[in-house]
Each structure stands twice: as C-alpha cells, then as structure tokens.
Image 1 (cartoon, helix red, strand yellow):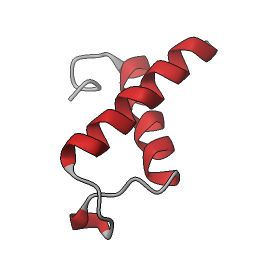
Image 2 (cartoon, rainbow, N blue to C red):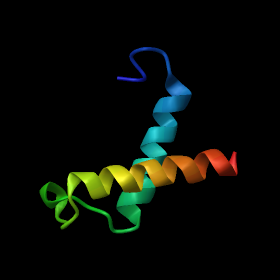
Image 3 (cartoon, rainbow, N blue to C red):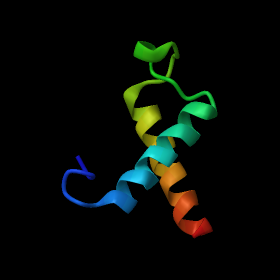
Length: 55
C-alpha cells in the first residue's frame, strides 16, 4: 500500500523490518511459528526503530 501512495522508501523500510523480524525467528502461527500478532508487531516496530537509528 505504501508503494501505491508513492512512499517507496517507507515501503522498503517496512519490508526490511519484516525480514529482520522473521529472520530472527519471530513467526506467527500461519507461517509456521508460535508468536502472537502482538509479538510480531512488536518485533517489526523494534526492527523499524533499529533501522532508523542506523540511518
């Protein structure tokens, strides 16, 4: 959706944060893990924060 609105950089950051979260083993049940949606959301937010700090 971010891409649709022309927010391509933000879309890439969200995608990167999701990759970081899933790469660290945070997976919801629908993709083979045990994390809750709250835990997944927290992991993505933490990854976004760390990406922002690194920039």
